[in-house]
Length: 311
Image 1 (tube, helix red, strand yellow):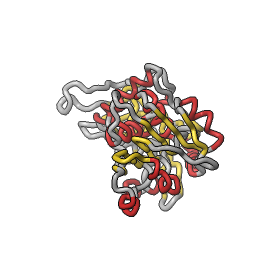
Image 2: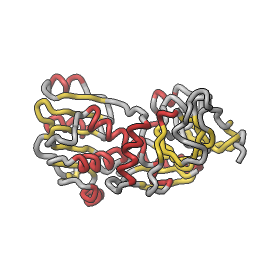
Image 3: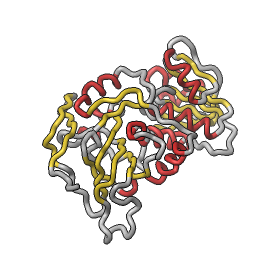
């Protein structure tokens, strides 16, 4: 089927207005890029205010995607492209380019992975950013290995990253796995494999942990330092860690990072979903034109997994 010249897309009109369009030009891939027909995308808290987003004029949000390959890199740039026309793929695309709240998007070869066959398109769009963030937090920055006898605390265990982190820590075989969430999500987080679940609105976390993953920031981050063992690791994907706290807890190792697209890691993680070791969770879905309502719901917090836009 011939690719159209224009497409439906959702654009940010700074500072905070989202405007649907039906006349956005379809992007043209370079000889080394893929063109993907997007089926679904998921949205991320605060992405409308990210510096990478605001550097572009009328940016398109949404960097998670599930879609179908429309064109692949030319043979003179990649002798045997990993994906062929018609393949279903998932990806976390670079934050420096327009996102996937549009019918078409360009993607780099290193961003793509096969769509898990047992997930719906809606579920698959909820996977890339969240699971890559959780993987990189725990295993790249947090230093976990499959053989380690470790304890893990996940702050915000019911959110997009949190649900993936709990499942990965369970798969890893954490000796003690604790998650925090609101009261309505306690049983949900238990079902993910957490040994203990703390309702942050009325209880405090007890004990210390080898790795603490902060997906929340704010007061939760401020209070969790005491829960990190000496020489333990505090990893934040929410907000940077303040220097005064680092001085107060000099024996705590710390890192704040932003997830990097990685198709190789995503392909490995995709196999965990296909094998049934992990599940994807969608809190709500909206049509593309319902993007403003989707972001309003996300801003309220307390989601279970991700919010998805259906193209």
